[in-house]
Length: 154
Image (cartoon, rainbow, N blue to C red):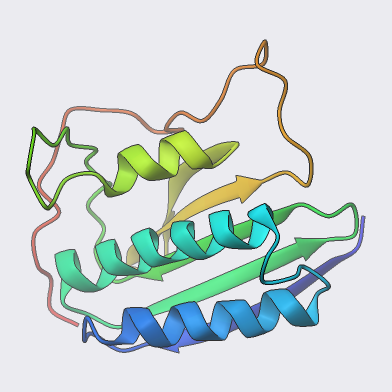
């Protein structure tokens, strides 16, 4: 299996999320995934959520990576300087926060997190074809008690 990896350093400013989306769209197009394809829209939304979580909850720079498999699947990773695990929350009603990891769980075929350096990497994978409804979807690889992400020194 051949894999192409590209990465972008993201600053600790929420405005960087838009730059990450634009960068991702250009890399997706370069890999042959058209802007109008559902796969591209799904990946850009996943990237937006993961980069937002890293920037907002840590206040530190992050690294966005996309890995393109020869078979057509894409893995997205966002590494940050916080060693605290992601904490899925449930948003109620008109809440404007707390839906990010729910979206990731609903859109990605698989997702999880792992320690990386002094921090962690949150990743998700999207297969090139829809997953059959009978197959299990998503799910955190390292579930645990909810932990507030908190800020760290960069």
